[in-house]
Image 1 (cartoon, helix red, strand yellow):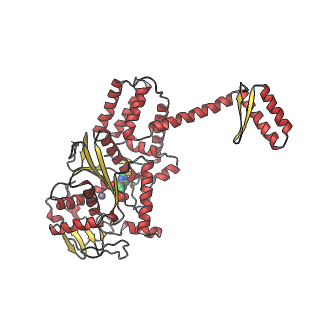
Image 2 (cartoon, rainbow, N blue to C red):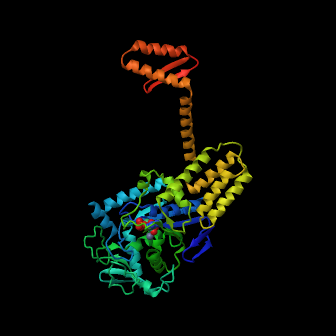
Image 3 (spheres, rainbow, N blue to C red):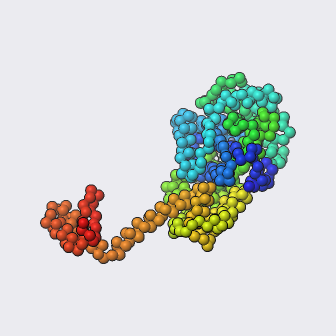
Length: 480
Ligand code: AMP
Ligand code: ZN
């Protein structure tokens, strides 16, 4: 399997540290608001990676953090705490909104068939661990105290910018629009490991530490939660592309300074979901949620299908027109699968050949759009129903589009509609139904003689009425 690595900037053959096993870390959500469908694109594509590794036979252990403290409105450690801002907006405590939005996030994941990682850990549960690692970074000379905060000293590293060759002006991490420069930093790229002083004295969650009462920076949480659960050598770390800098760059800096050796081999970044007016972001406040899509008639599987139709390393444009196209295409796909019958025996040769093109697509840096093409190729193939259904079932272990489940539903719906229209087309059945209705009306007006007459007339034509709590049904033919 070849997987693009942001570190080497090439598609490299994926070889884990230990044969047959993969450790995978995912940056989790900052739980101050609903996840938007852009965030969910990242989690869907990471889920595809997770599921495909399992499909390929690896034993995957996956860990995700929940950011419930320390993420400021600017990724460069300045601005307001996002959690506190969310709590103020909703007149709740930080922990209340953290719980509420964590639950909502996992509800969305379930609806989209995003597997829950083996370990999900909120940052607030790991503060002792953060303090231990920060202490060690100070002892090793990689961190310093200034103005009450602890900073990571990026000048101590041979190479800080690992994902890109930045120009001099890009070093101005702390200086962004509307954000003040932090005068405590020795170097512009330095970042906060522990805050005891911030502009916001009303920070709700604080912990005691050797440097005073305060709270951790955002970056340290992912390094520590990963190392705590997955050890010193990580196979894959993933996140959205905006996390590459500064978040992942800082994670690498502090983890490798702490460990004294290389930490993570593969960095996988999912490109953004954009709208026509630019990047979708939670902080902008104008974002789309999965439940909003559902309320407009788009099933979560349609959104998953929409995401799989394009490659994770290309940005994706959301529009209702694009969603409508995905909805139509998904509906047609399900109808075609619904028309298949489990006929014949699985043809092993055809199965292997068609599966190979799916595997080839996925082995090539998770090319999900080609994998979807492989799915259509199965439908077109000259082989029997049993082979086709076996292949679709197999691919859907990775794609998780509910292909067979929704096809079965579609068949049941079609059968019910056919039954109804058959009744409507048959004048005898229509007449029986009219008589049943007339008898119901007669009984309702206490005209029991008329009701009995209708029953007798029907019986004379071979129709036996059956009264149940739910209403009257009938049987044609035998009167037993
Ligand atoms: P957050 O909850 O803001 O910490 O973000 C959760 C995940 O969503 C991170 O991996 C981000 O990189 C990712 N993300 C943020 N915005 C987008 C977007 N517009 N499209 C795709 N992924 C995004
Ligand atoms: Zn992270």
